[in-house]
Image 1: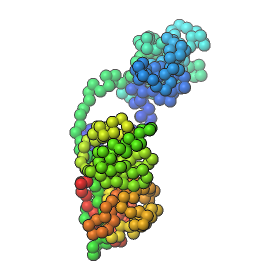
Image 2: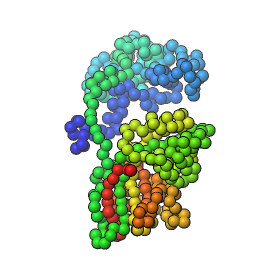
Image 3: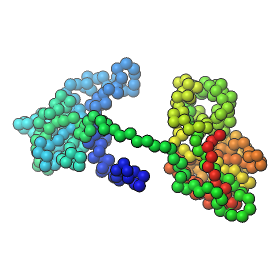
Image 4: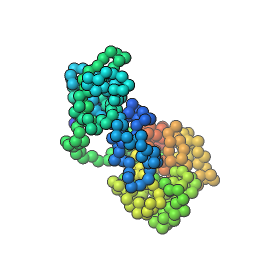
Length: 372
């Protein structure tokens, strides 16, 4: 709240979220009734006329393209003091309510504090042709009816951003609240563990597409001189570390804070793989020192003995119930093992405190450094 004060940030709950989605004409469960098509919901432009997609044949059936289909519209009361009711039927003016005159119903209703009156989304026959028409909202259950106007489903800011304000920002450490540089825990003697937050890195997940595993491996070899691991492991190549994350997928970890690292990798893999930029979503922590295995043994079930977890080994595991990608890099100059951990940024604070607590009895030297 303090960080957003200058922008007028305000807390909101699920009811506010529901109001805002109706004000903007965004469809949800009440409109996704199982009988509506994408075109009924105002999403027809997403249905390509040039290429295939799941459901294209069905979408073209006569009943699903009939001109009198019920489509999403907005509804507002003629008398602004009137309250709309979800489920009320749409009936033409002057018509006797009944199955033959029922032209649709109100699906989602709320009071809009921005507009100062009740609004609704509705499914109405030929609704897009009828904006501005006055009809009746008939609710036999409650014994209510009123005159309402059919409108566009977008009630608020129909220009969608006519008054956009641009804000500048800079990336912040996910450990900015938890990280304290210097000596932690045992104060005397040499620190048994070095805990380092690694900053300024790019992290892209590569997922080989069907039938392209071998081609992806060859492309990685050509680009960085190493093959991506086929099983849990980490391979160090030219300027990158390739970390196994699952069958036929791996991370590409590299130095630098490129705001968009995907295009360069798209050239490397040329349609053979799907790419997901994870740079801003993960925190990278590196642990080393004579006592690092003792500390990790307190919070991890992975056996880190040299015989079973040598340099280059990796695991997708958990530490104190927090999911991490863990791998062992080249040993430090003094011969101690070096382990790296990738964790989602939202769990980074918690994991840092857990690791610091586990290492406290051995003495910890906490630092922050860019990936090199």
